[in-house]
Image (cartoon, rainbow, N blue to C red; front, side, top):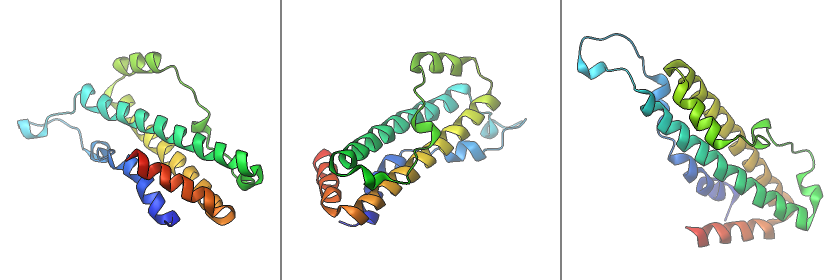
Length: 150
């Protein structure tokens, strides 16, 4: 299986992030019920989903890097994880803080979460490319593990 096919499998985790339209919604005063402003709950739910996806990406990256370190740590030479990879937020405190945010703050947090996830996905793709270039047999292990888990 090619890196592109494997990346497509990994991108399935991102498929759940179909709420980008929330970021692009124009929220403003309206006299019709069709243009009601988003409630905080409607913004918090996608944030929680983003956070869950970020956790999955970090776990996936951890597995990939462990495989590389077991085989040859030089595979990862030149790759630096994004700052969001090393952040270990207090989940309960973060969720509590979300409840206190304004819609604008929540939307800013949503945009930040999407940027963080995009950086993590890009990093995972870079690791996969390094693995494909240096140790294709590891890539086969990753593909097999993904197929078994789905």
